[in-house]
Figure 1 (cartoon, rainbow, N blue to C red):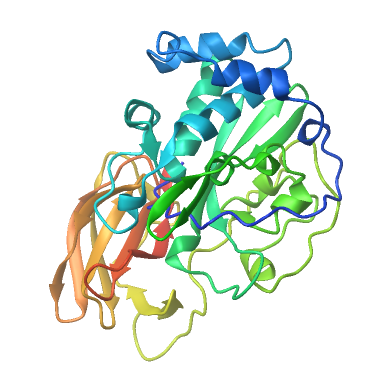
Figure 2: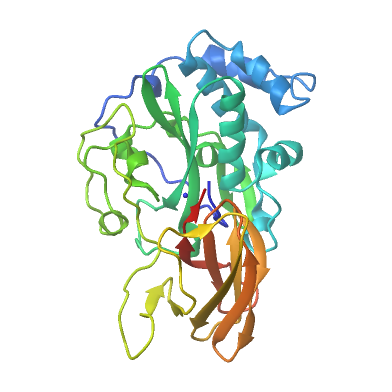
Amino acid sequence: MCRLLLLLCVLAPQAVAQSCPSPLASGDWSAVDGYALAATDREERSIQHLARYLHRAGRSDGARIRAAFRWTADRIAYDVDALTGRRPSQSADTTFAARMGVCEGYARLLVALLTEMDIEAEYVDGWGLPRNGTAAISPDGLHAWVAARAGRDWILLDPTWAAGGVARGRFIARYKPEWFATPPDDFARTHIPTLERWQLLASPLSLADAVARTEPLAECLDAPGQTTRRNPWNSNVSQQGEGPPWALTHGVRFRLLSPVPPDGYTAGTRAAIRVQVEGAREVAIFDGGVLNQELRASGDVWSGRVRIGREPVRVAVRMARGEPWRMVASVHVAD
Protein backbone atom coordinates (compact mmCIF):
# COMPACT_ATOMS: atom_id res chain seq x y z
CA MET A 1 0.00 0.00 0.00
CA CYS A 2 3.16 4.53 -2.69
CA ARG A 3 -0.02 5.14 -2.33
CA LEU A 4 -2.64 7.14 -0.81
CA LEU A 5 -3.20 5.62 2.39
CA LEU A 6 -4.21 7.63 5.21
CA LEU A 7 -2.08 4.93 6.63
CA LEU A 8 -3.08 4.64 10.21
CA CYS A 9 -0.69 2.11 11.66
CA VAL A 10 -1.59 -0.66 14.05
CA LEU A 11 0.57 -1.40 17.04
CA ALA A 12 3.35 -3.80 16.30
CA PRO A 13 2.84 -7.37 17.47
CA GLN A 14 5.74 -9.59 18.42
CA ALA A 15 7.39 -11.65 15.71
CA VAL A 16 7.35 -15.44 15.95
CA ALA A 17 9.80 -18.14 14.97
CA GLN A 18 10.88 -17.96 11.37
CA SER A 19 10.60 -20.69 8.77
CA CYS A 20 12.38 -19.30 5.73
CA PRO A 21 16.08 -18.51 6.04
CA SER A 22 16.87 -14.82 6.30
CA PRO A 23 20.61 -14.36 6.93
CA LEU A 24 20.36 -10.60 7.47
CA ALA A 25 17.77 -11.09 10.22
CA SER A 26 20.45 -12.58 12.48
CA GLY A 27 24.06 -11.76 13.13
CA ASP A 28 25.77 -9.00 15.05
CA TRP A 29 24.69 -5.58 13.83
CA SER A 30 25.91 -3.71 16.89
CA ALA A 31 28.75 -1.90 15.09
CA VAL A 32 26.50 -0.80 12.23
CA ASP A 33 23.74 0.25 14.63
CA GLY A 34 26.20 2.22 16.74
CA TYR A 35 27.52 4.01 13.67
CA ALA A 36 24.01 4.92 12.49
CA LEU A 37 22.97 6.27 15.89
CA ALA A 38 26.17 8.33 16.17
CA ALA A 39 25.08 10.63 13.34
CA THR A 40 25.36 14.26 14.43
CA ASP A 41 23.46 17.37 13.45
CA ARG A 42 26.09 17.97 10.79
CA GLU A 43 25.40 14.63 9.11
CA GLU A 44 21.68 15.13 9.55
CA ARG A 45 21.49 18.46 7.70
CA SER A 46 19.62 16.87 4.81
CA ILE A 47 18.56 13.51 3.47
CA GLN A 48 21.47 13.67 1.04
CA HIS A 49 24.07 14.39 3.74
CA LEU A 50 22.65 11.67 5.96
CA ALA A 51 22.64 9.12 3.13
CA ARG A 52 26.32 9.83 2.41
CA TYR A 53 27.10 9.28 6.08
CA LEU A 54 25.07 6.05 6.36
CA HIS A 55 26.63 4.74 3.15
CA ARG A 56 29.91 4.46 5.07
CA ALA A 57 28.34 2.13 7.68
CA GLY A 58 29.66 -0.92 5.83
CA ARG A 59 30.79 -2.31 2.52
CA SER A 60 27.69 -4.38 1.79
CA ASP A 61 24.23 -3.24 0.80
CA GLY A 62 22.92 -5.21 3.77
CA ALA A 63 24.95 -3.11 6.21
CA ARG A 64 23.88 0.14 4.54
CA ILE A 65 20.21 -0.88 4.57
CA ARG A 66 20.54 -1.78 8.23
CA ALA A 67 22.10 1.59 9.04
CA ALA A 68 19.29 3.51 7.29
CA PHE A 69 16.66 1.30 8.94
CA ARG A 70 18.17 1.75 12.41
CA TRP A 71 18.44 5.53 12.04
CA THR A 72 14.85 5.85 10.81
CA ALA A 73 13.46 3.71 13.61
CA ASP A 74 15.39 5.75 16.19
CA ARG A 75 15.05 9.33 14.97
CA ILE A 76 11.44 9.42 13.72
CA ALA A 77 8.62 9.63 16.26
CA TYR A 78 5.14 8.39 15.49
CA ASP A 79 2.68 11.25 14.92
CA VAL A 80 -0.12 10.25 17.27
CA ASP A 81 -2.12 13.42 16.56
CA ALA A 82 -2.41 12.33 12.93
CA LEU A 83 -4.61 9.43 14.02
CA THR A 84 -7.59 11.69 14.58
CA GLY A 85 -6.67 15.08 13.14
CA ARG A 86 -5.69 16.41 9.75
CA ARG A 87 -2.62 14.63 8.49
CA PRO A 88 0.36 16.60 7.23
CA SER A 89 2.21 15.52 4.12
CA GLN A 90 3.98 12.20 4.57
CA SER A 91 6.67 12.89 1.99
CA ALA A 92 10.24 11.92 2.79
CA ASP A 93 11.28 15.58 3.04
CA THR A 94 8.45 16.54 5.40
CA THR A 95 8.99 13.50 7.62
CA PHE A 96 12.73 14.15 7.76
CA ALA A 97 12.28 17.82 8.64
CA ALA A 98 9.63 17.18 11.31
CA ARG A 99 11.30 14.01 12.63
CA MET A 100 7.74 12.73 12.88
CA GLY A 101 5.26 10.84 10.73
CA VAL A 102 2.90 7.92 10.40
CA CYS A 103 3.86 4.70 8.67
CA GLU A 104 3.72 6.24 5.20
CA GLY A 105 6.26 8.84 6.28
CA TYR A 106 8.57 6.26 7.87
CA ALA A 107 8.49 4.13 4.74
CA ARG A 108 8.91 6.99 2.27
CA LEU A 109 11.86 8.39 4.20
CA LEU A 110 13.60 5.02 4.36
CA VAL A 111 13.08 4.52 0.62
CA ALA A 112 14.53 8.00 -0.02
CA LEU A 113 17.63 7.27 2.05
CA LEU A 114 18.22 3.94 0.30
CA THR A 115 17.66 5.49 -3.11
CA GLU A 116 20.27 8.15 -2.32
CA MET A 117 22.68 5.28 -1.58
CA ASP A 118 21.91 3.68 -4.97
CA ILE A 119 20.11 0.80 -3.29
CA GLU A 120 16.95 -0.40 -4.98
CA ALA A 121 13.98 0.02 -2.65
CA GLU A 122 10.21 -0.14 -2.97
CA TYR A 123 7.48 1.56 -0.95
CA VAL A 124 4.85 -1.10 -0.14
CA ASP A 125 1.34 -0.43 1.13
CA GLY A 126 -1.35 -2.75 2.38
CA TRP A 127 -2.63 -3.92 5.75
CA GLY A 128 -1.02 -4.60 9.11
CA LEU A 129 -2.83 -7.34 11.02
CA PRO A 130 -2.61 -8.14 14.73
CA ARG A 131 -1.40 -11.62 15.66
CA ASN A 132 -3.91 -12.17 18.42
CA GLY A 133 -7.53 -11.27 19.09
CA THR A 134 -9.99 -10.32 16.43
CA ALA A 135 -8.78 -10.45 12.85
CA ALA A 136 -11.33 -7.95 11.58
CA ILE A 137 -9.92 -5.38 9.16
CA SER A 138 -10.30 -1.92 10.64
CA PRO A 139 -9.19 1.58 9.63
CA ASP A 140 -6.18 1.11 11.91
CA GLY A 141 -5.12 -1.79 9.69
CA LEU A 142 -3.92 0.35 6.79
CA HIS A 143 -0.15 0.24 6.80
CA ALA A 144 3.04 0.80 4.78
CA TRP A 145 6.52 -0.69 4.84
CA VAL A 146 9.58 -1.21 2.62
CA ALA A 147 11.17 -3.85 0.41
CA ALA A 148 14.86 -3.38 -0.39
CA ARG A 149 17.41 -5.21 -2.48
CA ALA A 150 20.49 -6.38 -0.57
CA GLY A 151 22.84 -7.74 -3.22
CA ARG A 152 20.87 -10.36 -5.14
CA ASP A 153 18.16 -10.80 -2.53
CA TRP A 154 15.16 -8.68 -1.58
CA ILE A 155 14.32 -8.21 2.10
CA LEU A 156 11.29 -6.81 3.96
CA LEU A 157 11.50 -4.01 6.53
CA ASP A 158 9.00 -2.27 8.78
CA PRO A 159 10.62 0.83 10.32
CA THR A 160 7.36 1.96 11.94
CA TRP A 161 6.82 -1.14 14.01
CA ALA A 162 10.55 -1.24 14.76
CA ALA A 163 10.34 2.26 16.27
CA GLY A 164 7.90 1.37 19.05
CA GLY A 165 4.17 1.71 19.59
CA VAL A 166 1.33 3.88 20.86
CA ALA A 167 -0.17 3.48 24.33
CA ARG A 168 -2.77 5.73 25.96
CA GLY A 169 -2.45 8.26 23.20
CA ARG A 170 1.34 8.58 23.45
CA PHE A 171 4.14 7.24 21.29
CA ILE A 172 6.46 4.92 23.22
CA ALA A 173 9.88 4.59 21.59
CA ARG A 174 11.10 1.02 21.93
CA TYR A 175 13.29 -0.46 19.23
CA LYS A 176 12.20 -3.88 17.90
CA PRO A 177 14.90 -5.43 15.69
CA GLU A 178 12.67 -8.31 14.57
CA TRP A 179 11.18 -6.08 11.88
CA PHE A 180 14.46 -5.89 9.97
CA ALA A 181 14.77 -8.45 7.16
CA THR A 182 11.89 -10.45 8.63
CA PRO A 183 11.49 -13.84 6.86
CA PRO A 184 8.76 -13.40 4.23
CA ASP A 185 6.55 -16.22 5.51
CA ASP A 186 6.61 -14.73 9.00
CA PHE A 187 6.07 -11.21 7.64
CA ALA A 188 2.99 -12.38 5.71
CA ARG A 189 1.26 -13.29 8.96
CA THR A 190 0.95 -9.60 9.79
CA HIS A 191 1.62 -7.70 6.53
CA ILE A 192 -0.53 -8.12 3.44
CA PRO A 193 0.52 -5.84 0.56
CA THR A 194 -1.84 -4.48 -2.04
CA LEU A 195 0.37 -6.09 -4.69
CA GLU A 196 0.85 -9.75 -3.82
CA ARG A 197 4.28 -9.89 -5.46
CA TRP A 198 5.72 -8.00 -2.48
CA GLN A 199 5.01 -10.87 -0.13
CA LEU A 200 8.11 -12.54 -1.64
CA LEU A 201 6.27 -15.85 -1.43
CA ALA A 202 5.76 -18.47 -4.12
CA SER A 203 2.18 -18.87 -2.85
CA PRO A 204 1.12 -15.43 -1.57
CA LEU A 205 -1.78 -15.12 0.83
CA SER A 206 -4.87 -13.16 -0.08
CA LEU A 207 -6.21 -10.65 2.41
CA ALA A 208 -9.07 -13.04 3.16
CA ASP A 209 -6.51 -15.81 3.87
CA ALA A 210 -4.66 -13.60 6.32
CA VAL A 211 -7.84 -12.55 8.12
CA ALA A 212 -8.76 -16.25 8.40
CA ARG A 213 -5.31 -16.91 9.91
CA THR A 214 -4.21 -19.22 7.11
CA GLU A 215 -0.58 -20.18 7.66
CA PRO A 216 1.71 -19.11 4.79
CA LEU A 217 3.85 -21.78 3.18
CA ALA A 218 7.59 -21.51 3.82
CA GLU A 219 8.31 -21.10 0.11
CA CYS A 220 10.11 -17.79 0.05
CA LEU A 221 11.52 -15.95 -2.96
CA ASP A 222 14.70 -13.91 -3.29
CA ALA A 223 12.92 -11.46 -5.59
CA PRO A 224 9.31 -10.33 -6.09
CA GLY A 225 7.18 -12.75 -8.06
CA GLN A 226 5.82 -11.97 -11.49
CA THR A 227 2.19 -11.78 -10.40
CA THR A 228 0.40 -8.44 -10.75
CA ARG A 229 -2.59 -9.57 -8.73
CA ARG A 230 -3.95 -7.05 -6.25
CA ASN A 231 -5.82 -7.56 -3.03
CA PRO A 232 -9.15 -5.76 -3.49
CA TRP A 233 -10.01 -2.93 -1.15
CA ASN A 234 -13.69 -3.86 -1.16
CA SER A 235 -15.25 -6.94 0.39
CA ASN A 236 -18.65 -8.59 0.71
CA VAL A 237 -19.92 -7.13 -2.56
CA SER A 238 -23.58 -7.84 -3.25
CA GLN A 239 -25.96 -6.84 -6.02
CA GLN A 240 -29.28 -5.52 -4.78
CA GLY A 241 -31.74 -3.67 -6.99
CA GLU A 242 -30.75 -1.52 -9.93
CA GLY A 243 -27.47 0.28 -10.48
CA PRO A 244 -23.92 -0.57 -9.35
CA PRO A 245 -23.44 -3.26 -6.70
CA TRP A 246 -23.31 -2.35 -3.04
CA ALA A 247 -20.26 -3.19 -0.96
CA LEU A 248 -19.72 -3.55 2.78
CA THR A 249 -16.26 -2.54 4.01
CA HIS A 250 -15.21 -1.57 7.56
CA GLY A 251 -18.89 -1.61 8.52
CA VAL A 252 -19.75 0.96 5.82
CA ARG A 253 -22.34 0.09 3.15
CA PHE A 254 -21.64 2.04 -0.03
CA ARG A 255 -21.46 1.95 -3.81
CA LEU A 256 -19.62 3.95 -6.45
CA LEU A 257 -22.11 5.64 -8.77
CA SER A 258 -19.63 7.34 -11.10
CA PRO A 259 -18.09 5.10 -13.79
CA VAL A 260 -14.44 4.14 -13.34
CA PRO A 261 -12.24 3.77 -16.47
CA PRO A 262 -11.14 0.14 -17.01
CA ASP A 263 -7.46 1.13 -16.62
CA GLY A 264 -8.12 3.49 -13.72
CA TYR A 265 -7.96 7.26 -13.58
CA THR A 266 -5.28 9.20 -15.45
CA ALA A 267 -2.86 11.34 -13.43
CA GLY A 268 -3.22 15.07 -14.00
CA THR A 269 -6.85 14.95 -15.08
CA ARG A 270 -10.03 15.87 -13.21
CA ALA A 271 -12.74 13.34 -12.47
CA ALA A 272 -16.31 13.61 -11.25
CA ILE A 273 -16.77 11.21 -8.36
CA ARG A 274 -20.15 10.20 -6.92
CA VAL A 275 -20.53 7.70 -4.12
CA GLN A 276 -23.63 6.62 -2.22
CA VAL A 277 -23.03 5.87 1.47
CA GLU A 278 -25.54 4.87 4.11
CA GLY A 279 -25.35 6.89 7.31
CA ALA A 280 -22.12 8.80 6.62
CA ARG A 281 -21.25 12.05 8.36
CA GLU A 282 -18.35 12.91 6.03
CA VAL A 283 -17.00 11.47 2.78
CA ALA A 284 -13.68 12.54 1.27
CA ILE A 285 -11.15 11.61 -1.39
CA PHE A 286 -7.55 10.98 -0.31
CA ASP A 287 -4.43 11.05 -2.46
CA GLY A 288 -1.01 9.86 -1.30
CA GLY A 289 -1.88 10.03 2.39
CA VAL A 290 -3.17 13.58 2.10
CA LEU A 291 -6.79 14.73 2.13
CA ASN A 292 -7.52 15.76 -1.46
CA GLN A 293 -11.12 16.97 -1.30
CA GLU A 294 -14.22 16.54 0.83
CA LEU A 295 -17.33 15.60 -1.13
CA ARG A 296 -20.67 17.35 -0.82
CA ALA A 297 -23.82 15.54 0.23
CA SER A 298 -27.23 15.43 -1.36
CA GLY A 299 -29.11 12.96 0.76
CA ASP A 300 -26.91 9.88 0.96
CA VAL A 301 -25.12 10.64 -2.33
CA TRP A 302 -21.77 12.44 -2.06
CA SER A 303 -20.11 14.04 -5.07
CA GLY A 304 -17.37 16.37 -6.27
CA ARG A 305 -14.82 17.01 -9.01
CA VAL A 306 -11.36 15.84 -7.98
CA ARG A 307 -7.96 16.49 -9.50
CA ILE A 308 -6.20 13.13 -9.91
CA GLY A 309 -2.66 12.87 -8.57
CA ARG A 310 -0.18 10.06 -9.12
CA GLU A 311 -1.34 7.98 -6.17
CA PRO A 312 -4.40 5.71 -6.02
CA VAL A 313 -7.68 7.54 -5.48
CA ARG A 314 -9.28 6.33 -2.25
CA VAL A 315 -12.70 7.00 -0.82
CA ALA A 316 -12.77 7.59 2.93
CA VAL A 317 -15.80 7.78 5.20
CA ARG A 318 -16.44 9.08 8.69
CA MET A 319 -19.59 7.81 10.34
CA ALA A 320 -19.28 10.07 13.40
CA ARG A 321 -17.47 13.26 14.36
CA GLY A 322 -13.87 12.73 15.50
CA GLU A 323 -13.54 9.10 14.48
CA PRO A 324 -10.71 7.96 12.18
CA TRP A 325 -11.39 7.91 8.46
CA ARG A 326 -12.46 4.50 7.15
CA MET A 327 -10.93 3.71 3.76
CA VAL A 328 -13.62 1.88 1.80
CA ALA A 329 -12.52 1.94 -1.85
CA SER A 330 -9.41 2.46 -3.96
CA VAL A 331 -9.03 3.12 -7.68
CA HIS A 332 -5.75 2.68 -9.54
CA VAL A 333 -4.12 5.68 -11.25
CA ALA A 334 -2.48 5.06 -14.62
CA ASP A 335 0.90 6.62 -15.32
